[in-house]
Length: 319
Image 1 (cartoon, rainbow, N blue to C red):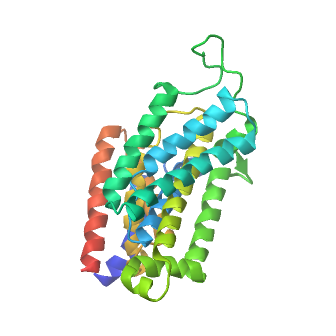
Image 2: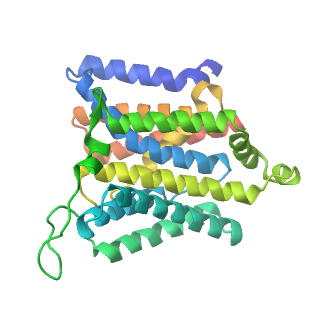
C-alpha cells in the first residue's frame, strides 16, 4: 500500500500509455503527445492556482469563471479596442488578481466559508461576462451592434502563445514547465514558500509564531486568480476567440489534478510537481478516450470517478 501510494500515479500513467499505445495505432506518436502536452498546459496552470489555495487550507471554485473572464478580456482588448500585446496580457492578469482579492475579502474579512464565497464569486463573474458580451463570442471581423465590424483582430504575437512552437516544442508547454519549476522552487526552497505551508498546516500556531496568516491567505487567492487568468490567456490564444464560459470545464480537471498530486511520491500535501503529474494523467486518459470515440459526456463520468478516488485517497492518508 505504501508503494502504491507513493508511486501509484506514475504507475497509472505508464499503464494508461501502454494500454492506449497497444490499442490505438496513432496514439504513441510525437504529434499526439505534443497535442496532449499542449492541452494540459492550460489545465496545469489552473491547477497550480488551485494548489496554492489548498496549501493555505482554502479552496477556490472561481478559477473556471476566471479563465473565461481572461479569454473575454484578451479578446476584447485585441478585437474590440484594437490594443497591442502588452494590454492583452496585463488586463486579464489584473482582473485575475482582482478576483483573487475579492475572494480573500469575502473569506478573510467577512469570514465566509471558502467554498460558498468562491462559488458566489464564480456566479458573479459569469454574470459580468454575459452582461458585457450579451452572450456572444468575440472573434475577428465580428459584427458590431451599432453596425460595421470589429476594428481589431487577434495579432500573431498573441496567437503564438497558444499556437506557436520553439525548437519543435509548443510554446505553451515551455511556459507551463517554466512556471511549474518556478513555483516548485519557490514553495520548496524559499522562506516565503514554507510560510505558505505553515499557514495551511496550523493557522493558529502560525499566527502565534508571528506569521501574518491573513496576508498569506490573501496572497494565495491572488496567485490562484493570476494563474487562472494566465490559463485564460493561453486558451484565448489557442482557439483565437473569446468565449463566455470557455473555462467552465477546467474547474473539475484542475481540482482533480491538484488532489491526485497529493499522493505523488507520498508527499501527502498539495505540491506543484504532483499537480503536473496529475494533469498528465488526466490529459493522457482523456486523449485516449477521445481517440477511442468515447462521447465527451461519458468522459465526465471518468473525471468524476477520478476526483472521488483522489479525494478518498487523500482523506485516507490524512486520517
